[in-house]
Image: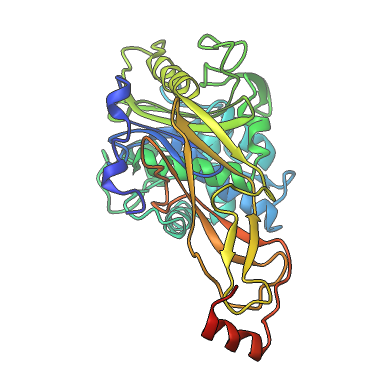
Length: 401
């Protein structure tokens, strides 16, 4: 498992969240800021559609589909899309819809029929698409997800589009940490997804008429769970009886984007805002209890700014940060920085990585989604050639001074 068991409940004691599982991470580095039962797989319902959307965007990027390509729902999918018990826009069997229309309906209205039609267009069949989903997740190190369809409904609700050989009550499952990885990959590879996930309301043309779509993410501006101090712009809700109310959210505040996932919030009725109340609680906690330390690319870090170069013309080389790093630390804590090596061999090339910076906090560990510590390359400021043989011999006999 990428996330160590120890971080499955990181800082859980700080915040009493009324959900079955949750996580908050820095969207860029994957640093974990809060976790509750974060490594236990649970039903994810319509958050599944984020994987479907990723594969759709990937197919467009690879030129296999375009936004104006069209897809026709099968009779089975059209029937699912007309079931008002599920989130849907009604699709007509045999009518051609553009990939753009289906994509928007999938993200804004969480339309199940639209998601299944995208799966058909990208994968050729539902089963082939599910295999693509599984392969993608495995490539991201997500090994214990259970995926059976492109939309997140229980398998038995899909008629002939159901996954063969699986019980009708079977649903897609993923842990909160794994869902956070999906969100992180989606935002990193296709940041334009936020242009659609941030739309509160839109219309969908069903062919013969217009359907009004309202985003299920009520934290968007203009909707009922909007918080003026949390400019949430994504990502995706999910609800089934088994899953409860779920939400993968993202917000950028003070220049720093975080991703939050809550699984199994209360869902007493379709009007219950619990998942958004709990998400707001988690987002407020992160921005109130942590400060961000930004270490800029090219900056010299006191106490970790030189490495010894015993055979170099100069016996040490100055190093600076090879990339900008953002580290969240609890209020009142400091960031500690150390180098992975104290000495390196000559020659040293200007701009080359000679070691790694490792970061820690004075109050706690800095866990990440991948389980790796937060690091950055330490790069040399100048060339430092190897000293000639006689200088090296002299140093070996008499020391370097």
